[in-house]
Length: 432
Image (cartoon, rainbow, N blue to C red):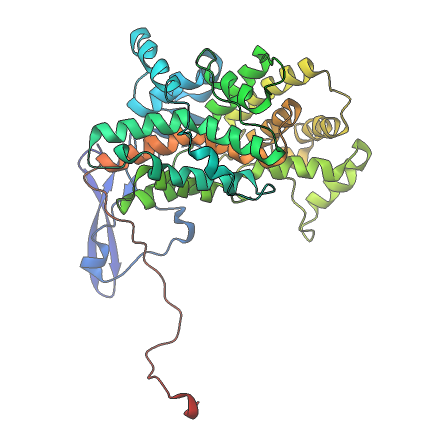
């Protein structure tokens, strides 16, 4: 919990002086407490996008955009991506500490044994059009889980919250894989308990009943890293959506469905899909100078997708790890001659050497590399955001559980700066 305030800020206006407490976090800038501003001064603050507002107290994830630093529970993301694996990271995000060997041995089977979906959910999929976007399917299926798992919807019961958390982490790979299978007209492949988390997902996506499918460990490792790097990212749009939905007392399945819906936006979870589509639009290496010139032209609306980041004003710490995985996967697949990947490699080289990009710190971000990896593995761009949702589910759940346990949290109710018509009387239609 935040320590008691030891300093304050004074706000002066209209002959009023209001004392506002200031809290100092473990990391990051001080926070001015404005909770009593309206009661004491009859004024609101105005902060579109809440970019200067701390909406909650959290101990899960910390980002320092200037340093290019991302910490899960204090652990640097590059260390976790190199030395850990996704389910261990899940444990860390959920419970606050890295597990002991015994705790991990208990946690992994607990997740693995919940990977199957209720059999009736297979019929639920068939209610969607065959050409439905996989994100619309997983959003609907996730929300429908509350209809199938009534015994884990009571948010006031700690054990039901725990059961719901494990179920969602375990079942989301199956939900996403079946959405993919449904979209391409192939039969559903059931989860296998003898495979690790990432391998199981890949097997459900690419195996068919007619023949054996073996998951390459390099591909599985790359997939695991994608999950780890996307597991949480502080109070972003979708996480804030989950918290806002949860503040009303909504059941956990509905809250995560709300997060999925928000993630679908191209400005959020759809960024890696947009980056790959841009590479395909450029088409060949010889056309890159044309698009570089357009990116530098202030009057041209074209933007280079997959470069720079709203939060990171330096190099995206996830991008370095993702670049290593991209090189490994591309080497394994032997597809260095792919025109799209050639464009990506040349764009990467330019971004890391061109003074314009360096000055503006437009480095390749995690979306740039993850899109390349997923394309090389064989996923269509329509599956990029569902995979992001799969990875982010654990972060949403950790944030949701933290919010439920926070005694200071209230139902979300942002204020507004009203600029509409003032009071006016209704006029009968014949007199208008």
